[in-house]
Length: 163
Image (cartoon, rainbow, N blue to C red; front, top):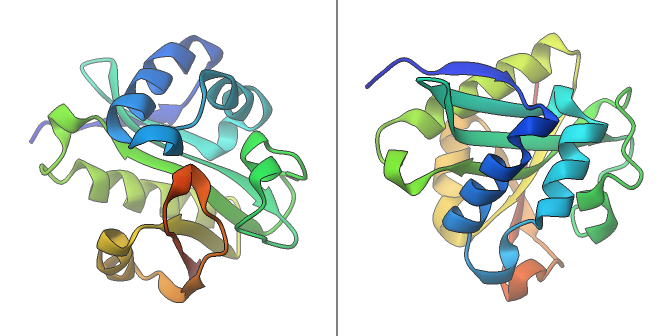
């Protein structure tokens, strides 16, 4: 495995990140290009890109909230986001399919967790599908509950990590 480089997203990364998002997520669960652009523009500190040979191969993006409501669809456009809030809320964890199964997602998540700790965040929240519950538990997330969100017409589960 090549060694990836981590960096914050910039507006110039919008198209590549959108391409990875729509290639990796099913149907309507992928964020729109506009949502990706908004997340990069409003909170680049929470938009971590992983690159190999200067090409983005994956990313995690998040916003921050004082009160976390995982089913809040407006938050995906960072409505209510406050960079000073102690709770990070992940919206996308994605590695391009060509690079999946090689350990990159684990490196990406570990780096994201380390960055959130260094920024003084207290918790990280996310929603995932059934098949990813054990993966996130491996990183230290604990299961909270089935989510009331039906984003993309799918069933989701809420998980949280205390930092």
